[in-house]
Length: 236
Image (cartoon, rainbow, N blue to C red; front, top):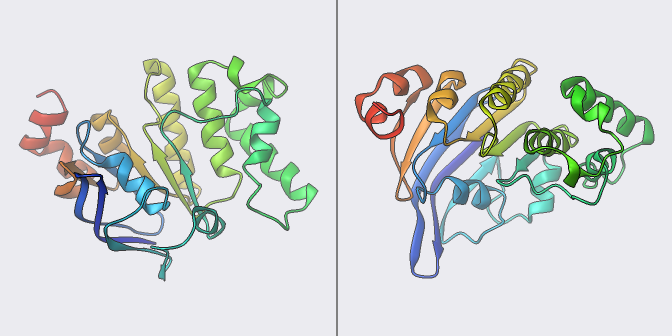
């Protein structure tokens, strides 16, 4: 579904990504792990074309999207839930969800109602807080809202950047259970996550990034058992 080949990104004189190559197959949950500054967020930003690339190509569903605008990429079925949630704090939960459909110019009212109901089924707490301002929600609820908004476009590939960041352990477990539920429903997922143990435990495959390059790849189970991964990322 997604092929990233020899991707490079620079911020001034600083190299954020160097010849990165990754793939995500249809129906997979793939995770990128690595320390701060490894290039994880830059990878998603470059795929969405939110930062300029200095080299490499990105293909989505067999089509070259390297130079496409971010809004066209979203319309093709690739949804990006950024780090830090980025919800609209002054808008209600319902209004935040509506903004997730803005790329669908021909969407009908009944489709919007169906999509919102689907999100409320996945996130019952959002239904309870439908009229509350997004900024009044807890951190976990805001993260749920950010994911739900990303799902309003009915994406074929959902990219998530640090969904567990700053959340209580019990909420983190809820988020990961949700990711598994989405995967079972057929959503392909590319996940960035600092909680490497949890990410690898639910991932089909994973890539380990360091200083902007892939240094290791394998199945989630294999990486969980890899001594170098255990030492660097799993507290071993």
